[in-house]
Image 1 (tube, rainbow, N blue to C red):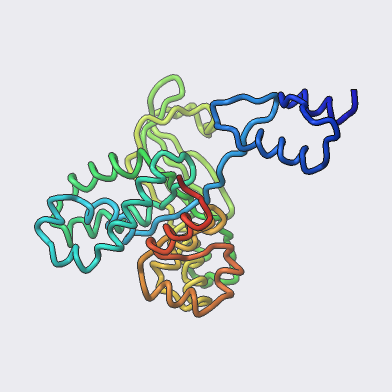
Image 2: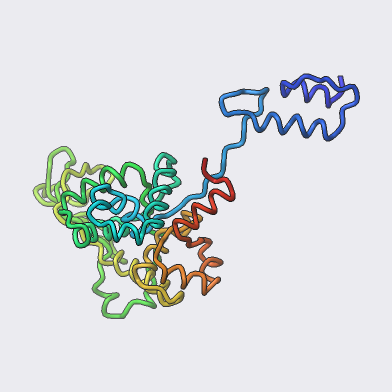
Length: 298
């Protein structure tokens, strides 16, 4: 048996040609790889459809969730008519991606803006917005963490360097018995101070079971986060809010979806942003057209 005949039999393709050619072999392989997902042919499985990872900014969340609500549309027909294309395309993206684990992303910053605008622009209470976030976002989105933050003393004013505390946590924990604790961390020292257990002294964090956090401060993290966002804003001439979205999305997605016309204009005007961040900023309707053209979605 020739190698070609063996390969065809291994793939589950019956050999009917007396003088097979390279074109015949290619045709058979294409038949195999294009088989439905529930059909097993030999040992070859169909290639999964590529679906890009996307980050939805605040205005897309608002259009996909709050402005897509039937009651809002019936109460604001003029607003819906003006934004119909943006609202419907945002909702379509949301529906197409909501079951694609790990591909649909946003950030705690976007969620915070979403909650704030839900009260100011849509008259919803804080508790109502928390419920919407729980149902519509936290169960369907992956929340991006910030990228790596570097503590650079050279960019922090001297007085602040001496006073800065990277982290402070006060609460209740347990190592055998419950006690109150304080975790301190700065550039020169990290320690746990305990209360109620005078014989414990320093406690290994790995042995502690945290019961309650009464207060949490991370001024060092805040300084580094907003320093980085300010750096991006200054470099690419973006607003601080847009720079924060970019920082959260960078390295985690291929597309940042937004209908902020000013942001999209700035992005298209400066090609170095896409080149350096490896992200494409695109409107919701344009992204759907791209998905249709490249067959990203069903």
